[in-house]
Length: 457
Image (cartoon, rainbow, N blue to C red; front, top):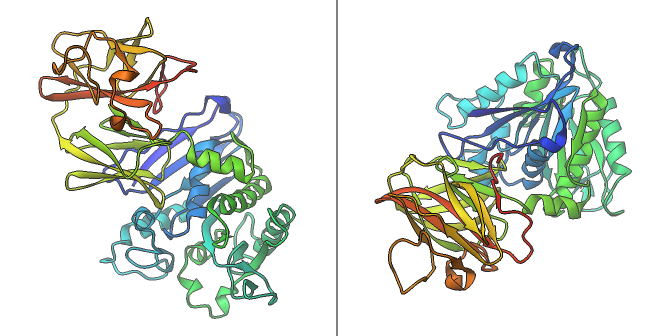
C-alpha cells in the first residue's frame, strides 16, 4: 500500500494530482484530499472514506472514485479515497481474483491472499478521524421495493443506496435510513432517463442475511461507523454509472458539510471526456512518459526499460505490468496497448537538455512533451547521443541525430506513438545506458513549446 496526501489549501485551479509510485504495479492507492480553516480543529471537520474497486468487474464504482481523487478539490473537510482497492481483480476483470473481497470482513484466514489488504482497510474504518464510509459498487438491473419487471424488482441491486439497518450506534450521522432516503430522493429527481430509477435498499442484515454479515459496510456498523453502499446499474454504460455514483456522493458531501469543486460538468458527455482525455503513464521516475489518449493498439513498439522500473500515472487506475519482455498498459478494466521491452541500465546524470523548436530554444526535462509545427533539433551535448525513433535524416543512419533539424516528414509513420501519426520518441543515451525520452508532437495549432504531464514545469 502507498499513501499520497494532497492538501488543497489555496485554489482548485492549481490542483496537481501526485501520481502513483509503488513497490508493485498492483498496490492500491490511498489519497487524502481536503483542508480545514486554521482556526478550526481538524477533529471537528467532517471526514468521509470512499472505497472503489473492492470488486474488479464494477467499473462505475472505481472510475467514480478515481475521478474524485483526480478532478475534485475540497475544503472544510477531508475525503480519503481508495479508488482501486482490489487492483488485481480490476486488471483481471473479475469479481475477485482470490474470491469476493467484500465477503471477507467477518472472518478471514491469515493465509488468504487478501488478508493484509482487508486488515488495513479495517484499520482505516476504525480510525477515529473517519466519520462516514461509502463503498462503491455496480449491481444488476434497478432495485425496486416492489416487483415492476424482470429488470426492476426487490432482487435487483443496481441504482440504489444500500443500508444494513435504519440506524447505527454512532455519535454522528446515525440515522442511516433518513440519510439514505435523502440521497436516493435527490438522485431520483436527476435521472438520465425516465426508464431508470433510484431507491433506498435496506438489507436488514441483522435479521439473518449471512452474506451481508461478511461485508465491509456491516463491519463498519459493528465499529460504530455509519456506512453506505452505493450501487449503479450494470445495465448502463460506464459514464452513466459514474454519473449516478457522483450524484449520490455529492449529496453525502453536502449533508456532512464538505465543500467541493470539480473541474468538469456533471453530465455523461463531460464524464466520458474526462475519463478518456489527458491520461499519462510514466516510467523510471518519469524519464519516459507515454500519452495514452490516442495510443496505438494493440502494439506500440520497443522501449528501453530499467529492470527495477517504477510506474507513475495521473490516474490511480492506470498501471503497467511486465510479462517477460512485454509490458501491458492497463487503464481500469481495459488494456490500452502493449510494448516490447529492451532491458537497459539507466543513467541519471542529466535531468534536462536544450532543444530548438521552430527556432526557439527551450530547456526540456526528460518526460516532457515537446510541440513543433516544423522541426525539432536537440542541442548537442558531449557524451550524449539522440536516437529519434523511426526517423531517417541526413545521408542515412549515423547513430546520433543531435544537432540535426528533424521534420515530421523524416519519421516513418509506423513508429508514431499515436494513431494519428503525430507523436514520436526522442531517446537519449550515454554510451549504452539509457538517459530519458522526450515525446515530440507535430502540431499546426501548437499553443506551447513543451508540457510536463506528470509534474509542474
